[in-house]
Length: 326
Image 1 (cartoon, rainbow, N blue to C red):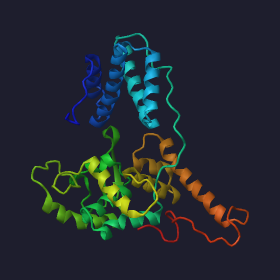
Image 2 (cartoon, rainbow, N blue to C red):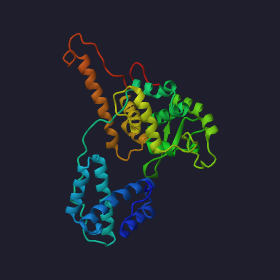
Image 3 (cartoon, helix red, strand yellow):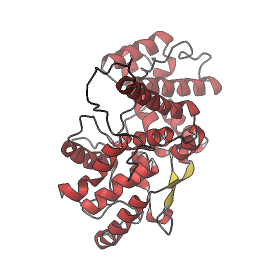
Image 4 (cartoon, rainbow, N blue to C red):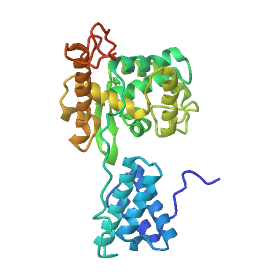
């Protein structure tokens, strides 16, 4: 069986392009791996067509996009593949390998305007309390993991690479290395701090000496937990939550953002806390608040959709409601 981490073979010109991204552009290793997968896939497609990838035309690029779209790939995955190819061909033109860029007239797919999956405050509080009651896996670690991801708005890649050394001495926050190796500071809630205080002593007992990276969150073997490990942990609790939502690690980050925006936090502050490059990415969380207002109107207004005498069955409130957050 092939090693899952084995890098796909590439034509030499593509290897030179990736070396350029790593050495000159200083691209992060994870981003570089994504670029490699995308252009390797295109190289394989071109090989089947009997052409060299560096000499492909706009028609080949378009047909490639159609092919991967037909495989039920997510829109963002297809657009990322096109972005990888655009960068490759811009590099070819810049350094004289070819005169034109065949991706210039190829359009990205339109991203559907859907609300991100998130938990209402009461749902999030119940979900974070699951490790206390479910008694599965490693409860002290799991509760700290869920609360740190939620209260800090962390990406899954950020939580698995977070080290003890980057956590504040009083555990109230941490320096996070995000996309593009950009650093930002995040804050942890009081409940998250308490969960960390309970977890750290047992973490120290299980820590393996070879864990030189000093990762904050460990697996059962005493080594840093992996991305797939965090996904698996959250999936186990999602199955026991009873929530009719497709929960995934990013849903905790979505919940963090939605709760702050709904509480009236300035969108640019939320943008900084999330580490978003574009304000447009953060602004989609304002739609969560709008949907909430529409639902409240439909339930409460005499001309809304609520039938006379119908009891309200609204979902849990966001931050700023009667119960607040934990």
